[in-house]
Length: 335
Image: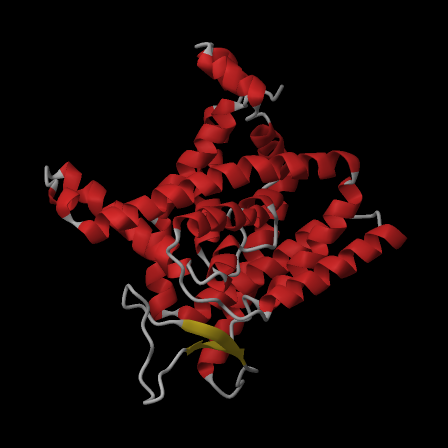
């Protein structure tokens, strides 16, 4: 049983949820890293594990207080509330900066992941043959995923449900970006941009008393896709939490070594100096998907040009991002 939380603890838990939600939205960044560095990763996994048959029986029988206590409800509800708020606020801000100042945003996230590697690895003193092997496997997996080519968009609802199960891995596995996985599956724009915007627009219209969306076939299809995706995410979140809980309980050091290797290997995904390669037709025009979005083929990475002032600003943001993580480390030690 976890200790009761003060008002300050509750506030910071919502902030951590905001950070997790924002991180899950950005391709290459893992919300799981936020949980790991924030010091609540294991509580997050073990709390999700409590969403099981016993919890379901408590809920169905109307024992709501027992259900709330058993599932560590206060922790999960505050964290999830922060994530939901993030999707309609912080993530919108991130979308803007990714559009206007993409290099600097990627640089900051690259620095944050560098800082998180240091944060996680500095106190890990369990290196031996098995953990070295796990670390190398994680490193190779991270590098391999970084260079996969994205697939085409697929609106099949069964596939959308599968996308939900897979994408939620970014919340439970530090270093594995759920957003980047969605890019590889071809459905990032459909699920994290178009569908979320459709929900946002629908809420805005409902508040003003406008229910015209009920006759908008495209909007209803987008909301259906989002509902199926959310259902898949919920199933994946609970399922993966049980697997990870078992691994952390029985193979904690090997699991941590695998995570350290994986995060290090995934640095290629957030390398700041890259340009997006879009699919083009024979006449040189961009190929668009069913929602008129450009189809991403891959990312072309290149070395920075240090004769440009922009490069040095990017380097500054790398150190700024790393500084955020080091600041969290400092804060954690003083608390």
